[in-house]
Image (cartoon, rainbow, N blue to C red):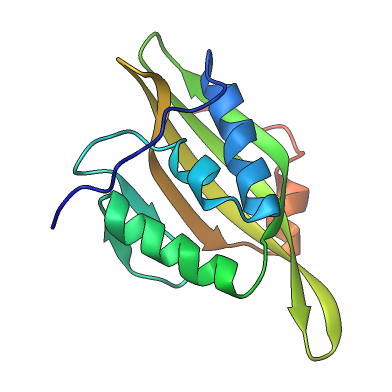
Length: 149
C-alpha cells in the first residue's frame, strides 16, 4: 500500500503542541491538520474504542475521514498523565466526548493513550489508542495513587 503524503505540522516544538493540534483537528474536522500530527512511518498505529488496530497512515486517514463524514468529534482532554524523555512522550488522557444520539447530546468518557516521538520533522504522534471509559474512571483519575509499584 503506498504511503499517504503527509504535510508538515504547523506547530510542533513539543509533544504538547502536537497533542493540542490533534484535539483541535478532531473538533474542527480538519483531516489535513490531524494527519500532520502523525509521524511519517509505516508502523504508526491507531485504535478507536471497540475498533480494530489500524496500521499506517492510509488506514488511519481513512478511519478519521469516515468519522468526519458524520461530523466533527467533540473530544475534550480533561486529565493528562505524562511520561516524557528526550525523544519520546506518552500521554494518558481522560477525554470527554459529546455524542449526538436520537435522545440528544450524550457525554461519554474515553481513556486514550497518545505516544509521541521526536523525529527529523519535530515531535509527531506514533500511536493513539482509545478505549471506552466510565464515570468512576474519570473520578479515579483525580485521586492520588495509594500504592507505588
